[in-house]
Length: 535
Image: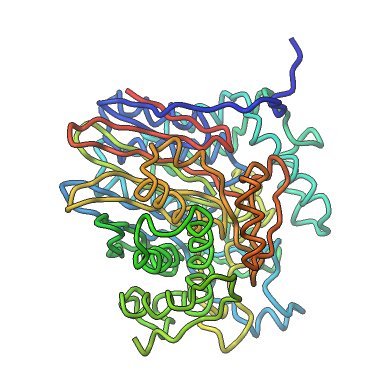
């Protein structure tokens, strides 16, 4: 039987999924089921999250990989923990070094934008501190899929083809290794086609067997260091050896009686919190539906203006988090929202290609986890014989020497990937997240307001149409966004544009909520191949 797996002429919907013993929600069904398999083997939510994350590097390499970064929020024992496993710039990378190489700013692709990857260290750190199973057990599903093969899912195939076109336009021998590893037939794999990656299986097996050490201080680290030396890149074996993930104190705001948690900078989860702080000053049911959308857009714009100016490696920031998240500063920014669209400017608070997954078990442990290669497969760089596609996270650095986010040796870049978590009265409600570059804080704001202000179930909160602010007064709306609201927003001065049908740039999210009886309710993004696997 022949059919087009990317053609859906009729609208469809998913129902919220309920379960009592465990749940894993990811953007790819095989990864969700891998996490559930680990739960059934006696693992907890942390083990399941690690299993799903490792599996996603295999079954959805178009968005993340072993060579990317990761962040996690873990709720266990009535407390929330944060893990920042994003890597710094290599010690040899500086603005002067880029200029000597002939670059006026950070290149998007190639060896230059590769920072130290943090994902393998994240898996190991989570397992050591909170896991119940060994890393060799949790990574087994990913290893088996890489070695034995799996059918490629539709959206992954589509994004793979786009990556093929992107790298095909690049010049230089260094890119040939991506094609050897991920397009050996001279094209991207098609939907339903079996894909195997034995090199990646061997790498995952080595990571599992050494608790991640081989990647940073072993044989794989040597391969990566030698590769970058050969191609005159900046990343070295010593950079890998010096890396350790950081346990951090999560940050939060109270939004209408709910605690919304994010990871502190260098990530931009604080942008979502600042926007919610601004919105918190408006009455829940005040104004029309159009005014509700207008306020959300304006709050996101104001928060992003501050985020893009002030957020960087926490050691480089010259504005405190308390100042950015203060109610007085939110009130000051709120005053700027009127009846017409504004062009956002940062305030002065001193005066005042990603995957996301959620996991929960029957004991109350919950994980909000996100990892990414930044743009698709990342920099287009694959270390031969490893299956490791390296991220291009360094592209997020500024080349302005006066900016707090300016590229520098050992410095972490502004980071777009952010896990979210919702609680109330000190009790966990659950993890949520929306992947997709700079849409992520905007997606967090929409998920939280859909849930708290509109009372939508987790699936409906994800199904709802989204906007995407891109700069100035320009806001892009999904193709199915209500036209009457769009027209009203235009009259309010917004430069409204529509995304194409099937535009993947409006984010892809997952949600798991837990009620007082311990029942789990999950939703999975309809804009991708995702699934809620439940037990």
